[in-house]
Length: 276
Image (cartoon, rainbow, N blue to C red; front, side, top):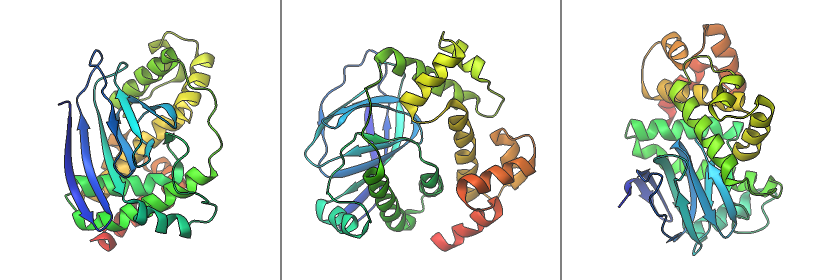
């Protein structure tokens, strides 16, 4: 098997698992089936997800969406391996959430994924920090908050356009890997485009279509997400975390962190005591 799944926490109607896949290009994808509602946050790697709702390439920060009884395939022809925080909800559990979310009129996801969304960044960072620190008690509340946020976002999302070509997906997957490996140093649009053998303009359009955001937005959110996880999981100095994440000065980090996360780094770190 190329996939290992470790249950992190569970309760009546819900479960969260750490799912690590080691599949690589050349491995034949096999069909699986969602047994419950699935909301999986990609934390590492890229892969192609194909289901009845459509086909999408998923990169870190994106949310995989699955409906009970729906068959799906995941392919890694453009890269090796991935890791996800996978939340599973029973239909009755999810139905209670949908009833309380304004604008959500149906039970079930119409699309295969949500792109990385700014308002989900703090929640996903908290969830990843809980995974890294084995804080299983935090997951019941986090799972409920993530499910509600995803249901609301899915209800507001517009219909998906054309499915990106496999060539475009491959180019974006290559760029995502480059960002993941080098997020702590300056990365220009030209360098990322050169890595995929395309012009900067074409690369920008392609990346935005496939990933749901621009390359710079993805780079910035990668840095901020990693910083947020370390703020929750460690007692390292904020300045050390900022510089390690790729920010040249503390004031810029503080300003962008607050804009993206909604709190200052110190306030965000202080909030971890309320999750214990």
